[in-house]
Image (tube, rainbow over all chains, first blue to last red; front, side, top):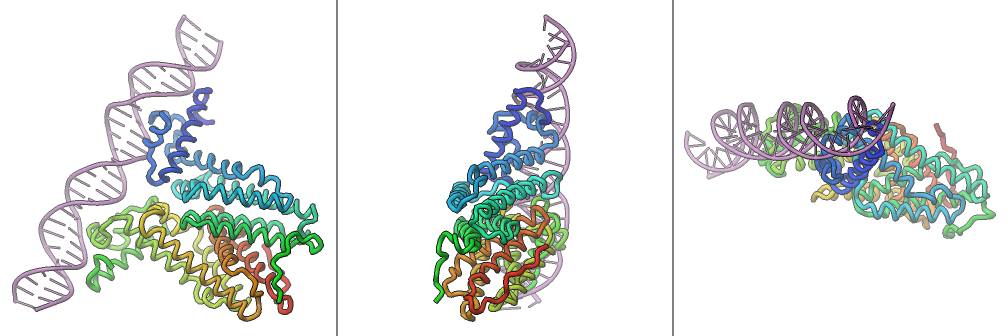
Amino acid sequence: MPGAATVKGRATRARIVEGAAGVLREQGVASTTLDDIRDRTGTSKSQLFHYFPAGKDELLLAVAQFEADRVLADQQPHLGRLDSWESWQRWRDVVVERYERQGDHCPLGSLFLQVGRDRPGARAIVTELMRQWQGQLARGMRALQTNGLVSPALDVDREAAALLAGVQGGVAIMMSTGDSAHLKAALDTGIDHLRAAAPAAVRPVPPEEARS
Amino acid sequence: MPGAATVKGRATRARIVEGAAGVLREQGVASTTLDDIRDRTGTSKSQLFHYFPAGKDELLLAVAQFEADRVLADQQPHLGRLDSWESWQRWRDVVVERYERQGDHCPLGSLFLQVGRDRPGARAIVTELMRQWQGQLARGMRALQTNGLVSPALDVDREAAALLAGVQGGVAIMMSTGDSAHLKAALDTGIDHLRAAAPAAVRPVPPEEARS
DNA sequence: CCCTTTCTGGACTTGCCGGTCCATTTTCTG
DNA sequence: CAGAAAATGGACCGGCAAGTCCAGAAAGGG
């Protein structure tokens, strides 16, 4: 916790990060100035630079980490317990609901564009987020396998990667178009794909019998 | 073609847009100034404002349209002829190759962040791009149905939406992490999902995918 | 060939915003 | 209760880049 040696200091620093996150969500990175953040958080210019000596970029990076942590937290506890079809469905609903509420703004995406993906730390934040997210999806798929709901032959890692990509793309498209249909389609077909890999004996939902 | 009444004028305007697109690809939106574009295109400040009276935003929007047109053009002719498993595979390879070459920079994404999604025209550009892209995928899937390679029961629109989302997300993840595994996974599982919907009689290839 | 319109060059203005500085207050430590 | 270290307030600076302006050159058109 650089530049925050006392309780008061840590509190102020946290207030800055949270407040900055709020401002950034509301008005976007491009049009947010340090003065906006200063106003919102009731701080002074010198405080901003006291806690983030490297300036705006360092602050933005801290906000990025803050937002990244929220992404997974908002999906819990469902994301951590994907061991039945019902739990997958609940997770799917939570994801849709979370991003529909977030509206057409992607805090993380814009942050990285501003900071620059190459900056030490920036790439690491998103890579780690994706790694954990995908890991939890894969874990859920293995749980389905363990419970005999999905064939052990399923390539879990590839499937989890594809599902994660679908979610990311669905969100991205929603940001641009305002329509969540793609996100829902990606989630539903992804889960359908798992269902199709169910051992025939326990196949849960007759997947649309239309062989004629 | 606002502000370009003569051949010479139109040529200059086009030179500005293309040059600006180049600069933006190389150094990103955030750090590109009108002077950079002026240097690159061998023009003067007054020319920039002559052809784009509303200033930088209007120019960026024109570049966005330019880049959007490229996206689909780069996938042709494969995207237009998705009527066999082989053509789907070729398209898949072209997409991967195109985005791997593009590296970790997304001209369109950054452009919209800078301009703001809400600006009249901005949202329309990406919405139209997605609509056309998805339309061509759906058309390809219907061609498979017509050729008896895929069950007529397949929900083409949902499947196309999901595949498009996967591609978008795969690209987005590649931009952030530098790894194209998610893009490949999304494409391959998406196409697998189609293969799984093949009428049993003509099921083409036992889905054996090379994974790396 | 003249007169209008379009196009071009580049100097100049202007406001914004990241960053600096130092004085002052508060908190920690022994 | 000192003295040090941390935290705070806010005035100030300086550069940069978007946008303006006008003079002058080229096209176009009757």
